[in-house]
Length: 542
Image 1 (tube, rainbow, N blue to C red):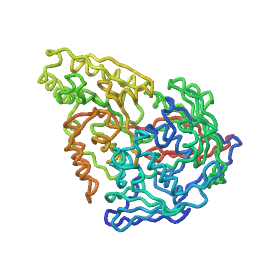
Image 2: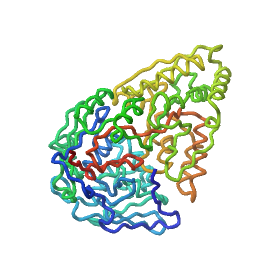
Image 3: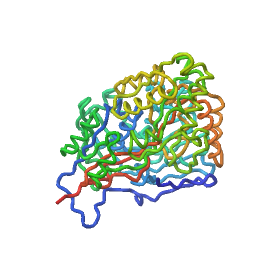
Image 4: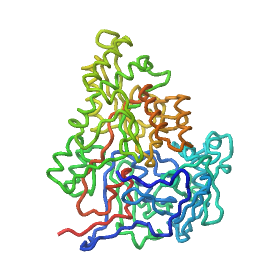
């Protein structure tokens, strides 16, 4: 994990000289470029959206980073570098940020990218008319008037963002956020072309209609099959972009994807569950496992419609305790993952994992305590029979984890578990509507700071699919915004989640994938795994 240097709480002034930190594809001495400059990778499911204002998933964000460019980007180590903005400064009190935009930035249709394009995009994302699943992110950024705008109580033109001139964007925030530059690398803050959206409506993201400002343009999209992106000649740094075609293949079966990779049909795919040790031995330079700022957990339905048993904190705690995470990460997953007893990933910058009770126990102690809690609640082997359902999106790994967890619950607690799988969009809808009992989830940090995890469970978060509403928790997270040292507050918030159990943390991700040796420049050291094809290239192989 590369820790980013944050701006100090007492000095919020930051400036980056034009172009000095721009990261481009740079072949190393002795490397010969291949005549084939393509990159083909596999994704699990169809993209719910590739509209920056509507994206809510990791894979959609990967596509958006190729088609669009935000104010700031990240380099291969996850450091903030210039994007459309070349300089950024904060006022003395940290509540006004000013971004200077590069005049050479263009849309793929040749129009200039201006500050008004960012103003339009941010207002659009916050406007309830769009119903963006990430509107809450604008409020999380503390942009002035974001709350009332998102609630429909104030027009979107009152959002605290304005174009001083074509190449100067000003953002007013309610309180200082030292890591604010990190937040504007997120896809929700990317510019979108107003005139194109107004002309094509919800069809603006189709090939032939879509206009972006990134290094690539959308050239083909076949639902449930593939997305193809080709080099954008109007990108301001096109002369330094080497990969000319990026293709995402949608393959629901991980084993089939691996077979196709080994047959040379693609350059990268995820490693199927449990196969990393074997593949690392057989393909030592191609099989890769690196920490990734994502946490795997189960949402617990906290609504009135949930089963009575799940309304009992003792049952929820028992379910969490009875999951043998060491067996899951060492025997089932076997790809460098680590056991999680909290939500915030252990490798998050500036984070120290608090000592929650479960983490200090042996598994035998956890199981014994879980049995006691179930007996107290009136369930378990000598109590009322209990059957629960785990919902997950279609994937071999999610299925195997769910099977293993259900066996642990049966053996330790006498609980019967049914498993239900759904395709991605249906699954997201069901989880959003709390139409589940327990649901698989994975949260990846939107920026490298603990609040990116903990804010998920605030009452106004659209990603709070557990529907956990706690005034005490909300107050803690609000207090953290202005704290000189928010770490103790974050730790208290984690302890509260461990106490109330609206989620069952399971493991901290490792990115396990296999990638062709000829591909260079992939961001393996970026803890968020935010990669940019414009920084990559393919070398010739003997």
